[in-house]
Amino acid sequence: MKTPAFQRRVAEAMGDEEWLGSIARSNSGTTKDLALQIIKATAGPDQIPLIELRASGSTQEAAQKKAEAAVGQLIRAHDELAQPALTRMRADLAINREKLTSAERDLENLGKLVASASVKDDRFTQLALMTSLRIEKEAETFAHRQMILALETALGAPATQPAKTIEAVFASDNPVSPKKSLLMVLGLLGGLLLGLMSVFVSDAWRRAQQSKGTETS
Image 1 (cartoon, rainbow, N blue to C red):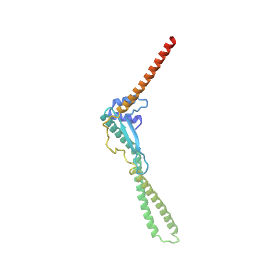
Image 2 (cartoon, one colour):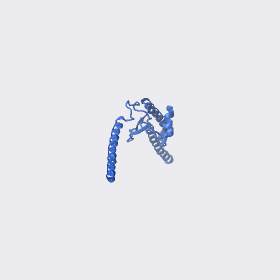
Image 3 (spheres, rainbow, N blue to C red):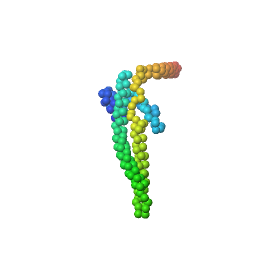
Image 4 (cartoon, helix red, strand yellow):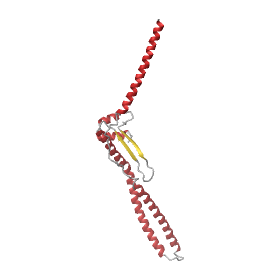
């Protein structure tokens, strides 16, 4: 969201030519119209990162439109980035489920053959082979189950939680800029400093004139 490309996409989606012009004139390719802050990082399996988005505009409606457009672009960008990985994981999940079904069927057949085989000297080798195959199928079945569990976990929430707003876009009734109280305080301090400086300059000039007059006489 801090990249020039993202801000241009938001401005183009809004058709805001003024904002596009400001972006083009900026040395960094971005403006301060959008600001974000991560207020909750991923600290555990059930934690979802939250982003606080702030948008500024010449009017309340303009700021709200920028925020809504930025959220819309963020959701689309998130979906575009996540879709290939999700498609691949879903395909792998389907393949592993098919392999698990086949392995369970083979394991059941081998179990029946081992149970029905009688241990005789001419069939001992065959029984050992079937037992070995059964052990291999059990290991294969376990591996497929573990893979399915891992894929299902990866495809479940919150890992694949789509980007969305948790509350409606809020536009403040009070303008954030200019800050009148701050400007008043700075103006008073500036006026006081200028007054003090004028007093010192006037006093220095008066002393210099008096000194010059004394030297002349």
